[in-house]
Length: 167
View 1 (cartoon, rainbow, N blue to C red):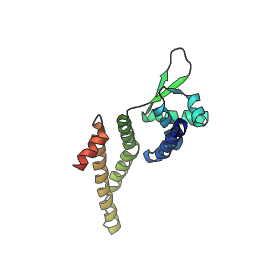
View 2: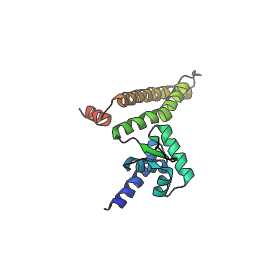
View 3: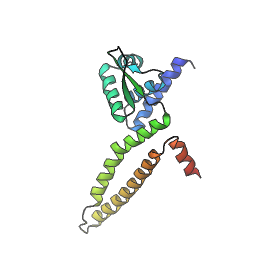
View 4: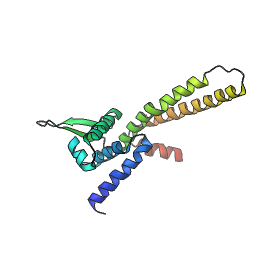
């Protein structure tokens, strides 16, 4: 496999995986491109490489910045903005896990707590709703605490966590 083909395959595959971490394909492809680029890239370079519009590039780069995955860099004497991404895969995984918890798990926990806290009217259906949402709330909180503890671990947290689970 040639370099160009390997690069395109990586970017395409990473883009497809984006939905698993809760982001769209173009956003994941931009992050993948920045991840394997030795130097920060401008909006124009990203657009050209991925064959996507300026609006699509700008919107997705902004979202990646909001996630804390991409940073904007200015080069002395240049008017263009350049972008880079976290290169440490373990730190990248920590950032994604922390952000997914904030964006996805925390709102679910809040909703489950609210629903499971309703007063029962004695109806078996409301009793079951309360019982099951309480159980889900407890499980979601436990999972989120476990994720938070894992994210707090610094280097190689994924490897360390897997090793601990396997013991």
